[in-house]
Image (cartoon, rainbow, N blue to C red; front, side):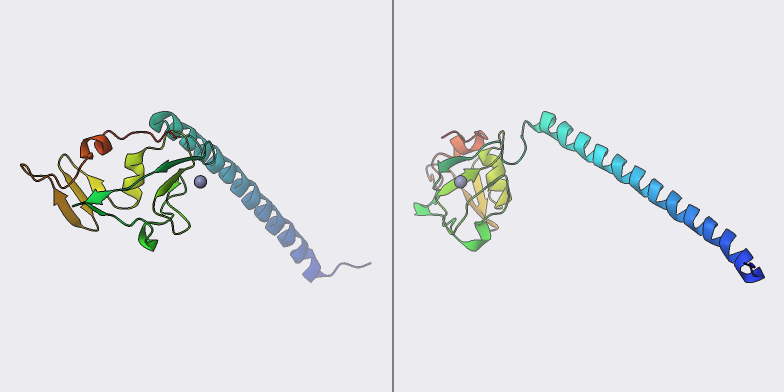
Length: 152
Ligand SMILES: [Zn+2]
């Protein structure tokens, strides 16, 4: 069998291309392994820093009702539903909080649905409701501010 001049130049070129492709894949694999190790270290570091365990580490329920001026806030509205996998209200129900990771707090739940508690004010849907003097619009605000863990 006679090897043509054209084939003589294609074979070395093919070997070089295959080598480059192999090096590329080896390098990509090495980097994705490093990314994975970094992600695991990141998650483990955050678990230690925050005290929040992984999803599914618990499944607890707590009843909740927020009243502003004696009117209940309707958390069954779509805009409040399933805002976090860690803690949420779901299935069109606004009265039961589902907590799916140890260490998640009630304060975190409020953050996920855009409710903010300050010393004497509650902000919800960008409206601010504040206690002032004898006008107590928010009962139990102090309790909410403690960032309590939910225990059932
Ligand atoms: Zn549940």
